Length: 262
Image (tube, rainbow, N blue to C red; front, top):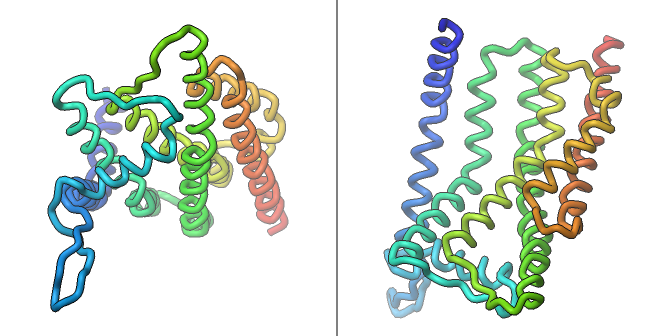
């Protein structure tokens, strides 16, 4: 019982520490949902300014996603009166999350900072910028490579059975942003490996000695979140996961030897 009370108290402290990020997230979401670029005449010149409009940034961004990712011949449909509205809310929230993620990462690391030793504090500071870069790299990989391939493969089966290809608006945007965020989080694998090794939770040699099991886990995980049945998108996700894993091995082994020499 004491353990759960301590865990609950710790969770409350963590939420307090990221409260400013939560406010920022909703502020961005509110802005994206209500405001968009509108052309106005000001002092005799035509300017594009962020103003309240139905063609908000979230609506414009949704149109961009639809153009980039929706396979040819597939129609988006609204299944109920709230679908389009909720799809724009989801777009606004998830777009806000992606843009404010660096601040979330900073607040999380700052929350952990007081509980760390001197060596661990240095590591936290050093991995902040690489973590942000890795997150956006993984998100871009999912957006430009993983999602289009998955959609094309899945919808190729509709022609085989003679079905009409439709896609619910809400399901479309939820799946897109879900895979984008998962792609970003997956790319942080080397960061988690470094943190676990340098905090003393896991020895650096553990990663090298168990790479076969890790590869099997990557295959299973990729098969679960990319269920296209062909193995193509599974391989596309497993390959970068393995790459990030071996990058984590190199970093932990190299820095582990440096620490031992000191």
